[in-house]
Amino acid sequence: IDGDCLVVRILADHALPAKPAVVAEVRRLQQPRVYHLAGGDGPLKVRASGKRGCEVVVTRVWGDRVEEISHDSYPVMDRVVGS
Image (cartoon, rainbow, N blue to C red; front, top):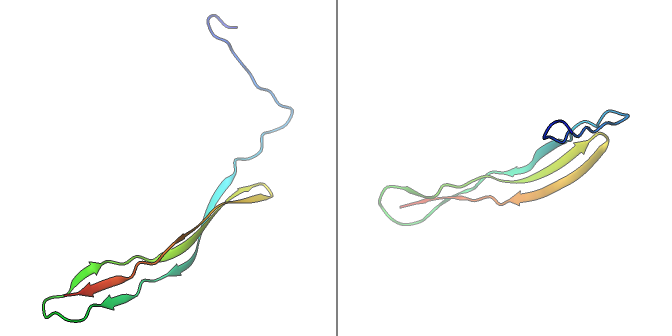
């Protein structure tokens, strides 16, 4: 006790291990396809802008230990244009 404070110290006989690294890996990128709507004589408008799809794997690496945190899939969204 130091005045009005309680002081706590943690001691160890060895160094603490390094912090784990978190690694995200993007797999299988899929490009969107473009669909044109039939009909209409007016100017073309983008009805859906489209987005790439992918699969993402996140792992934690701690020394020689590797563990998967998540494995997620994001579907491709195709681009749609028409009048």
